[in-house]
Image 1 (cartoon, rainbow, N blue to C red):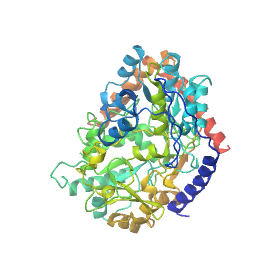
Image 2 (image 1 turned 90 degrees about the vertical axis):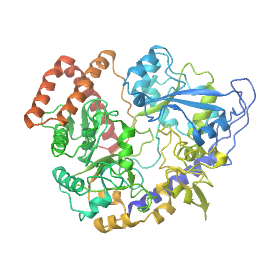
Image 3 (image 1 turned 30 degrees about the vertical axis):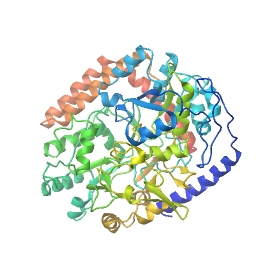
Image 4 (image 1 turned 120 degrees about the vertical axis):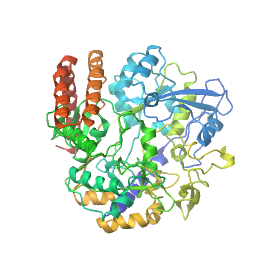
Length: 592
């Protein structure tokens, strides 16, 4: 069975279950709003119920959203800003630590002030600290009027056990899915991570088979030599990276571990899908060390963008969109030829999965308890909790999922013969296309939802459509998504789906979802970890830019010698105990 057919079959099964659930869902009764007025009852005319509160006629409410996942900071504007203002009379002021570039300082400052935000999006492990500090509000009194949030009960009940000892509902996990846990939660028909090369330049070389990571560098060197500049005359680099998502190690090196069956578990520990192979980033000659060596080799070959250690996400994304880098390790970094709407004639330069023959990709599976370990919470100082819950219920609703994924009927899609079909407007790659005047006008791309993290996975069935919210998985998109580049790709690899290729060749392993929530660090561990993170990350970047093997090795040895002084042994023992619990949870799911 092909990947496409399997996905569609899973979707039909999920839809059947959803219809059955909908038949059993009680209607919400009228309730009282924060201002004391009676509100309207449930409206399920769009295929999914929405909260019974109606705030459209109340005073304008600016909601501060502290969001560790956002890549945008400021007021949500444009057409989506107009949608939520018209419907709820709210504005979202997004506070994004990774845009601010101050690490934990913003979190610490706002926490100390006693007001992290009205809505908080951050790791579940940190929610426990916020609960203890009195920064969160119990959402359970408001859930009766929130049928779409109630559908996430399995996820938020499990999270409550860790965050609040099972009392109340202080956080609702995000990216919750009811799809099979052994299915890779990728990006359409692509895996989440992989080796994605600028396809036209790779195909121009004859699409050579790549045996290993050294072979990848050889191909990248050929691509850069053949194309020292892009179509606009801008300098091209085989590899580029950025620093603002590093965390406790150099992410550019850490992401390469996914190519060899490893994914981060806790701290500096990584493991394969079932926990039978556990590694530590501090291991001499270990896989993380080897990937730092790989980046250093690339640097000494003249293949690494010199801005890599200083630039941010926006800068590297711009370079990928302009085709100025040859290699991307994420499906979403640069336009992807298998994205369903890609057009070689009008789209940005396209990237495609190129399998490395000795690689086995680690990819997370769908999870009814949520993915990425993040959650949504309501701040204890929120002025109008009912209105916040009304918005969050919309955010988890079928209509909200479509709008936050830039799917507007009559603008980006039409229902034709009972199926959603992308419009010419949606397919247009013109970066200057504008939103319709009735939606407020302005650049379409600027007006998109900036929250960047959902409550419900976009691959799940949306009852308004009868298909996934994710348009790259629509049956009409899969049928029409063929282009010159995808035909070339299929000719080379014998299938039209990257995930099909990986599964057929046993080159992907799925990490099963569990209900495990990582506990928050005790204060002493937190202090030591912050110092160690800085040491690991700073040294890693220095190693990438080392001018010789001896300098590379000296930097590593000096770092290793300093680790005990910063409490590495204590933090490592703490992390290892958590790793053991995570692996036990995985093995329970796998029946081992």
